[in-house]
Length: 579
Image 1 (cartoon, one colour):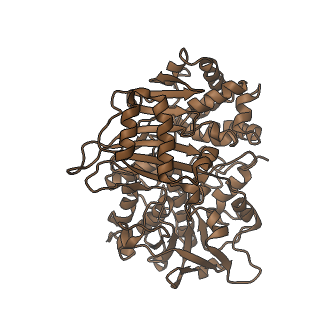
Image 2: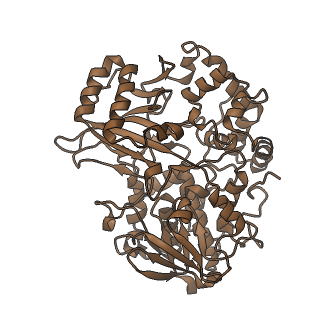
Image 3: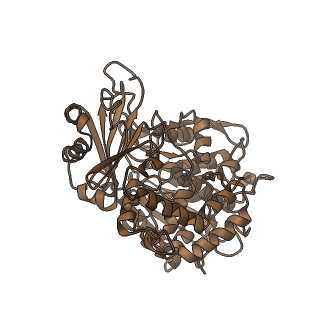
């Protein structure tokens, strides 16, 4: 690869560069169970992306996954909602328009996700993201009350004072620490080089915040105003100044899978992917046709209230659900936000003074940092923004932060609507500002800002705000989420590593997390991934847990297809520490 060629993005997780997509592609299964373990019943708690991926692959390997879900939905199977933050809402049957309340977009590099989407027949298309010409007609940056229009980010160089130098210094700093070379090494699958260069970045910058790197002379060396401008304009999807407190490593991991990649969305709603995991008919190792839906009798079980964990993994786990049922399983995969381990689901040992999680794992769970996030969308009957300055993406330092216009194509029926205006996509303190506000109040606030930024369309915007239908969510207020996702702050790398390593138990010869008991509980979900917020990595975490369950049951890898735990001791894969 030519050194002057922009490096490609990759969704290979640099901390553990295992190719999950290849592992389950082409009909490959995650392991071969001994005959005595075939049909083992496994509790999968949470029907989000990670839980559904784990259930689907456990089913393909010969287990019977029993899914529990706390979220309710009138149109979901058995009144339960599938998908977790894969949460799409079509407000009327005649609408083509879909409101994405969780997974709005994902990188084209997300091979595992795209592979499942192809299997389930879920259509994907380019997303109108910032500076994504020609997919996005226009990106308008509004900062300090002034507006700057751009097709690509370089258009801001001569339009927004100070941006050329700020962006150039940022790019130079990334090159200086070896970021672009790491991208090239990942693309070439040179894992030895990836490991060597990432170790240097990890050891040096693990204590650094994103803001420190932007300001420090041995980072990007920006002034405060330049850092603020760059943060508002965006250096990657959703990396605004809301994220200045995050670990620099978190930002670099995000950029590794997005810098140089376009973004995609599901025009029929990302919930279609969840429905695919649930209802797609696949085959077990004996060639019998089956689906997660069929194994579960057409509906998930209700919310879990308590888990009784046997110290001996061979005795499994007892799951107590809110309908009063208590049932024993060979193992349990726990995928909800891990804050629920402290606040919503009682996890207890059946033997006194025997921990369910070791002290290091409890420490990691208790020190998770969740970011608040809110989204407010307006479903409208026509694309009133077409060919105006609002046709695309608006980024601003005002209350609403980011707005997107999306055309979902011709309505599905008479009177249906095709347009969605994402009025606001906010994080952290910006989300907290409107957390107590009603939907009507939120719409009024965001329309006020957008009308000021786009005066030529202000009257139509106000009119559609009166006649359109608004949907909003604040993820920190959702009982079973309590925040959108975990993000790491400086000093969190040891916690992140331990959470990721939980699925390994002691299968590699010694506990992957010192002091961790070898019971039949497996943590998965976004919290345990290296780069949270991205659905592809949540899916991979479900595969990790599925591998752990299969290994506990005595499974061995299919020839030539080692799983994530089978390569754990390989120095190209073992997650690094800061020591």
